[in-house]
Every structure is written in structure tokens, then in C-alpha cells.
Length: 272
Image (cartoon, rainbow, N blue to C red; front, side):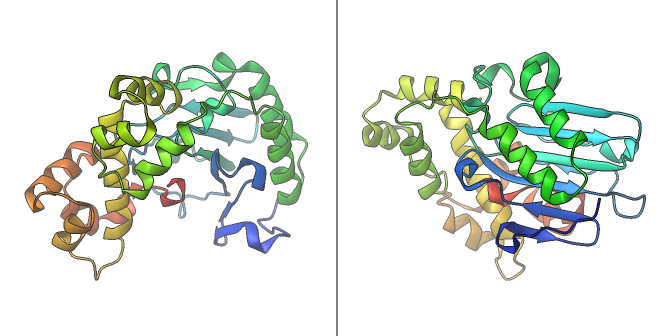
């Protein structure tokens, strides 16, 4: 399979061994991207740290003999990826947006948080459909179309009527909105909002606000002209020390260390 795709408007990033493609428009509020990699020893980084985003991921690897499908639940902690040790012939990741997986697999997301499962043990029907989508695809066009069809066919009408409003308020504030203000704007009690986010996103209100805030910081720090104090002010932290402490508690490293060693970390800003 070559990494050539017919619809240039759906390509987010591309290199000789990697392509990041937008999902079907009807899936855009649930899924951030399909990432397809044809790795080699020289292109697959070893031991990189996946930074938490509160989002789930389905990972499909092909070692030349069989497909392996794993579900990584919404992440609130950093973890080391071991994918480089397996050196698959193909790596596909379906990266969900916050609350996106719940629309396809209606298990309460806090039961999946920070755990990795065989997809067949969580949703055998979806696992079979995705596996068939990959196995019968000989071109990238077919692969993306087949993944779109499998996921569209599994959408459930279970979205909480106000989850979109709650999430949008959080994103618009870059995670700096208070729980009280979020409650007032959504007309739900703080306890109700926490329960809604636990079910749909996988983490409670305060942890998710911190995740959004720090993920916005990760995006800002990728630009060398943005210094730490400026990023701290932009995100509404009381002072630089609070920013550094929050960053380290979530990412396991300081902003300075992250900036010096960005290639050792993985984070997908498209999810927000």
C-alpha cells in the first residue's frame, strides 16, 4: 500500500512514511484523525512518551502475519509506548476526540481510563468490522473509506443533550473556566457535570479542565517564540510556578524539559 490519498482537503499531515487523514465529515465531532504509518527502524522512534489528553485511541498493527487491534482508554497519565519494539509493517491509529468513543462504544468511559484492552474484549462487533476494513483494503483510498463506513455504521444516538455545550465551554476557555461557572452556564449542578464527564469523557471535571489547559500549553510551547511566562499568562495561571507544577504533574516532565526533547513525546493537538 502506498500513502497516496485522492482528497487533498482531508490530509492533515504527510511524509514519505506517514499520513494523517481527517475522518468522514459526519465523524468529525467524534474522531480527530486516522494516522497511517509504514514504519522502518529509522522512522519509528523508540520509547517515546504519549502525553495524556483525556481521549481514547484504537491501534491496529500488522506484523505481516496477523492484525492486532487494541483500545487505549481515555488517558489522564503519560505512558511509554512500546510500539517501536514490535516494528510492525503497518501501524494505524484512530484517534478520538474527548467523549468521541462513547458515541461508538457506550461503555462508561471511566471504566476504560488509562487502560489498554484487546478491542475484541470490549466490542467484538466493532473489532470485526475494523479488522475486515483493513484486510480487504489494497489502497489507502479503500482503507479510509472502509474505516469511515465501519465507524459510521456504529454511531449510537446516545450523546447527552448538553455534552457538546459543556465541552465547548471548556475548550473556548482553554480549560481555565471554573467549575462553578461551568455549572451556571450549563444549568447543571457541579455534581451532575462531573458525572456526565466521567461517563462520556472518562475523567471528572477538574482533571479534565487541567488536561485541556495543559494540552493547550503543549501546542503553545511548540512555537519557540512563545516563552513560558507568556504561555502561563495566556492560559490563566496565577503565576509561572503554578503553571510548571501543573504541567509536571500531568506530563511527568517540566515545560523546559519537554521543549528540549519534543521528539521524545507524542501529543495530537487536533483532538482539541
